[in-house]
Length: 223
Length: 222
Image (cartoon, rainbow over all chains, first blue to last red):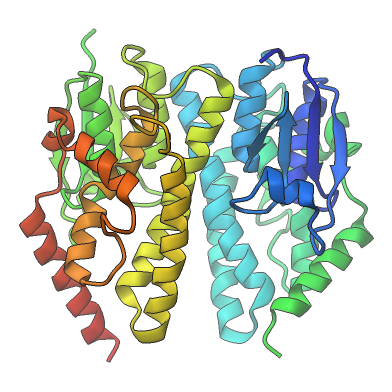
């Protein structure tokens, strides 16, 4: 399939997973059509393109659909070879894939629990979140970005939600773990990451995120 | 310099077995170290401090953890007999279904194992749907990966031994030839491959193991 063929992205502006794909496309200078999806009222297009999970983001390239944000990122990197997102060496690639899985499994699970729970459950979830963040903090020691000193890469993109969405998860969830004294490397990384033009220009407005998280929390919390 | 490859694994783990299968398919010599999960070795904890789990591949002293990450590493490092397809779209699909197997299918299988009554029925319904979706991917193909076995067959290898043993140990109507004829046809092909058989989970030992664990769980939840 020629790299130059028509690219569409189905997603929502508030979704951290959709934004990963937006950032990757922007960093590589790939032109695409963005189709905003209504997740409450899913379109027949979405259901046709992602019948298994019915979720966004979905990348459509040359008529074929690719799903799951990390898988889409790897697809993009393999199809458009300029400005590599993943490192070249297999060992370094294994490293970024390992930590990407960690961020999306351990950290996200703990953060979600902290977000919806209360009382003792929340305390435990917060502890798990802090532990996970501490491991990431250690991985950032001596590095400007997860991808190195010069440029952001795959792992920064995957970790991107920590730099921006996380504060609203804390705010709406009623807890606070991120601070610059406990996590100086993450704090510094956040600032550098958010200054990258492709990232800075592609972040949803705070109030939109507050609304979305507020709605999610109300629907998930036991009354 | 000769490559030094070690695999820390566990005989009943489908995650461990899939790495063994990949190494054998590629003809990569390796040293296998069996881990006692109730008494993890200091080496394992050193090589996988984050998760403290098997499998861990150690290549010339450098550790790689998480079975799917290991499979990709193996394919990128030893380029003979590639297990992942060449085309980026096919690679994306293979990765998608591998993730589906690990995140959905195996999670639901655990639910089926530990639940009882109505909850178990619901879990069985769920896994039936998931297996049917996976079965669809085999339609019109010799193997998941096409004409010969590859990455997705290696990941789906969990169905060949682990799933069938679980089915037998539980005795529920979860994974049968009747329900999934195409998957079972594929299983029939896989078990004829020597390399696949070399990595099989020994059945009787596994049935014992599953039953013991289920008993222990029931006991501890009383």
